[in-house]
Every structure is written in structure tokens, then in C-alpha cells.
Image (cartoon, rainbow over all chains, first blue to last red; front, side):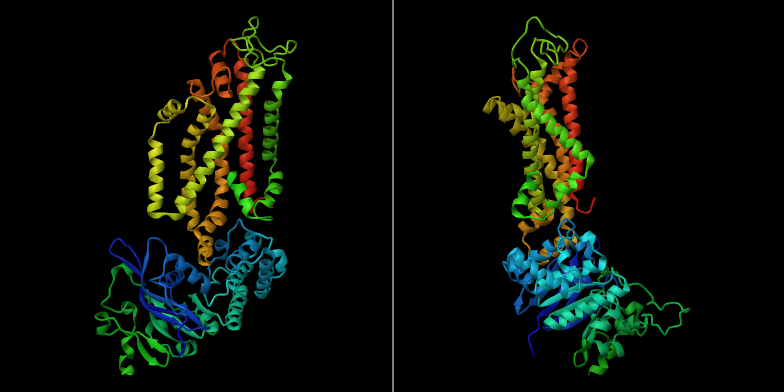
Length: 326
Length: 294
């Protein structure tokens, strides 16, 4: 088996809270193989974005991370801050949720696209400009040459997101992180952006972690899916398997809550009853989903279920499957 | 403004700056302000050559006389019988020089200091800001007298004293802005592509600071001119027979009932200059933002 590109072991992202620390990401382990497309889904506040920020090293100053992250065969923990930054910069790139705030409004597109290549590969401005035009053309931006001289506010939202992707492309990452890259866009543009992302991941062999709360996007794009709930991964597996046979009650509920075109349009939308848990409460002795779970058992409120292997590469953390695994 | 010049040398062509002049030209108020400033500067520099009188030449027969064009006393004379026109021009040179130089020095120091403090944050930030607090707590007059005792009274002293005090405000303002900016996504994005602190400071923080800093500069120049006049009034600044607008206004205010022209001419020049600075600053701020007016 090839060594994973990204190997996260026991990662927690902790914020200080009034009633003790809040664990936005809680003892989470995850691996990504080179070239793999992984979708991470979960509702708001499940810790998806914090996980990405922890991988990128962009956590807020008020929070801290515990646990190990190995990236491309090296442990990030013992590195000096400068080396860690360079190590990450050479291997990771991130597409932010809102391109209009992730682009510097005072710099032209060209200048922002060429910043990284000029520094990292010591190219001349002309060389970098040529690369930037190529990158823009690859993400299907029209009139790429003219765009270089434009400012972010002169572009449409979809084009801005494409520019962000082009920027990520130019960094030649081994792993691309996308934090809900299409939420700020309308549906037709969404589809195109996703198509571009998939194409790029496929053509360049770049691994992709796509964080979203849109299961449709995950189904469309990802080989493997991880479902997050309350800072933990509750189920992970191949997309086809997870969508056809969800093992964890939360995954089932999430899938059931997804509206379908064949639904009766007059019926109310199905929601998961109850609220996500208060992360500050720190109920380590129980399953975080237990209060909302339709198949709750006595032991769910006493013990926290471990990750169990259900089949090759399909794991879930639920007592329902304890017997199956044995 | 000095920050602008620096980024221009390191970032060639077509940056924010290239369109700056084009955008500034479209700002009507700013262009009027700029023209007035150039005009004032020309008058102040070349004006004295138009008058036959000297700066400290005393006319015993013309004490406190109103303007008299035939005799060459365009602005009249002061209570010592000296030509007010020449004194206003030469005073203007001092005031403008002190105002612009001290403002630039204090803005350059304050902006860089504040931006670094805000960007690094944590303990370094706390330490740097406590230093600012300490300097704030130092009484300005005490500081100036101390300098005067050590170095004697001179024009350089005024620059140093004013610059040393004025940069504190700038540092505080830019620190707050830098903190807000460093939380923005594009700074995170730059960081994720491996940009170091210096690059982030130069490319992503300082350009955004220019707007507020330029506006602050237009407020600083007038304040520095007034501070200078205050020092001169106390005898710590410009020494007779040399003068400045501040010193002339102080004289004029004293005699406003018997000789209103002594207040009107230097005061008029000062007001027009300050207004022009404000209009220019406002326009530059507008022009600095590429989103505006294109």
C-alpha cells in the first residue's frame, strides 16, 4: 500500500470557552492517499472548516491544535515554524469559500496569480504572466490575457472563484483543499466549477479534499466520503457504498433530509430533529449523536462508540455495527 | 506618502500606483487642492524676490501701516515696521517645510511601526504598544525643553520633537487597521502560498493602510504647523527675526484691533493651505481604492 499523502492522527482543534475548552475538532484521524478525491460532509458547526484550517496551519490565534499531522512523509509537529510554512506551501493549496474576500482588492489578478510562482520558482514577470494566462485558460476564463490587468471587483463571482482555482493550480500542490468552493455561487456556475475541480484533480493527479454541506456535490465528485458530526468523523467509506448503504444513523438521516426531484413538493422538508450538541459540554462518555438518534440504545449514552470496520475501507462509529464487525 | 514611494520602487509598473495618477486626475477637488498647493509653494519660494524689502529691515516711519502698493508694502507692515509681505513668504517656507517634513517622518515611522506591531501580534505587539503608551505619557513640553537644553534651539529640534510625538497616533491607527486586515481571507491565502511576513506586510497590509494614512496625513500637516507655532510662541521654535505662519498669526492675533491685516494675510495663507491639503488628501484616498471611479 502506498504511503498516505496526508495522515492525521488524533487531531483536536481546541478553543477556550467559558465552561472549559471547546473541541471544534475532536480526536480526529484521517488519511488521504495521493490523487484521492475525498469529500467531507456535515452540518454547520461540525468542525469541517476548522479541520481544513488546521491542515493549512491557518487556525485562529485563540485556538490551538493537538495531535499529529504527517504531510508527504514528514511530521509537521517537530518542524520549525519557517520550515513548516514552506513545507506546507510547497504541497498544499486552498480554495476559499468566498473568492471575493480571498482576493486582495488592491492588486490586479495578474499580480496575485504571479506572486507565488515568481517567488517559489524565481521566474521573470513575463514567464510568470505566461503561466498565469495558461492557468486561467485551463479553468476556462475567457480573455485570459486581458484579465491579468483587471482588479477582482471587475470580475463576476464565478470568474473570481476560477481565478482562485487558477492560483491554486499555479502552486502545483499535491493536495488541494476546497472549503465549500461553490456556496457563494449560483447553481449553473457551481456545476462548472466542480467540473473544473474534478478535471484538474484527475489530470494532475492532485489529491483533493472537498468540504461541503451539499451531499449532491459529494456524490458527484468524490471517490471517498467522510461524514463529520460534532468534531468527529462518524462514518467514512467509498462514496458509492456510503450513499447506497449508509451505516451510521446520522449519515442515514442526512441522506434522508436531502430533497429529491421525485419528492412530493407539497410535503414538508425532512429535517433531523433536535440540535447539534454543545461542544463545550464535553460529553466524552457518550455518543455525540445519541440525543437525536432514532436507534439509540442504552449503552450509547454511557460509552462512546469506536470506529469499526464494516467492509474494506468502510468505517463507522456506531454500536449498531459492533456485532456485525465481530 | 513615503510608503507609496517605497512600494513603487519594489513593484514595477501596472500596480495600484500606475492608475493612481489617472484616477487622481478625475478627482476635481483634489486637483484644485493640488494646484493651490503648488501655487502657494511657488509664491512662498519666489515671492520674496518681488519685494525690495528685507526680512528684518525696520522702517521707523511705517510702523503698523496698512497695505500700500505704491511703496511696495503689499501686505502692510507690522508693529516693528517690518514688511509683512516678505515675512509672510519666508514664514510660509518654514511652516510648509516643518509641516510636510515632520508629518512625513512621523507617518513613515508610525505606519511601519503600527503595521509590524499589528501583524506580528501577541507579546511583541503588547510590548511595542506599551512603549507607545510610555512615550504618550511623557509631557510634550518637558520633552521639548529637554531637547532644547541638550541640543540648543534650532529648526532641526522642531522636526525631532514634533516627529517623535506625532508618530504615536499614526502607530495606533495603523496597528488597529493592520490587525483587522491580517484577519482577512486574502492574507490567509497569501500565507498559505508561503508568503513570509515581510511579503504580507509589503503587498497586502501596507497598500491597504495607505488610504487611512493619507487622510491622517492631511490632518497631521495642519496640526504640525500649529504645534510649530506654539513652540515658536514659547520661544522654543523659530527665532526672531526668522518667522513662521504660526508666529505671525500669534503676533497678528495680539494686534487684531489696531492692525487686522497682520492677522488676515498669514492667517489667510494658512487656511487656504490647510484646506488645499484636506481636499488633496481626500482625493488621494479615493484614488487609492481601485474600486472607486473606474
